Length: 226
Image (cartoon, rainbow, N blue to C red):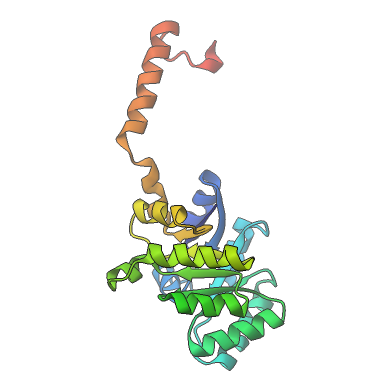
């Protein structure tokens, strides 16, 4: 089970990796626009410095043709490092690009997945991660959890090493459902993951425990004060 964050905001990333068990950072052009760094590659190198090599960094190409995608991938890998996961949309041109990049030995995250057959194509092409868009699929009237479940079963049946990186979330319930239906990884905005801890019962339980403790040992007498 992997928690990955969908942001390029340096402050958000720094806090998230400090507090939560975050194993990577994903981005796309829309996520980049939200922060609008003046110098894209410098900014991405700063992200790598924050998360280290032990966490994954996923960066998306913007070209729509295979040759452009591969050229952009090479530039990204040159400017940052060879460990970057290149995010490639699963279009007709994108599948060709995925095959080329995998043949060259690079990490690939197949993205913009709306349909199970798209996912199967990316799986057969050798993608390391496949990212179905959970909320967007649901908005189109389809069942994203069915897609994740069937894709998960295919990965297991055929022995692929690929992981499902569920994406496009609006709430914690969608994240929970994605994991429960077979996704090995999710990428979500930091704000969505923080909602896990917004349950008022958590704070009430802690306050009750503290009240009981202080009733025994005195107000403001913590464990380290004994």
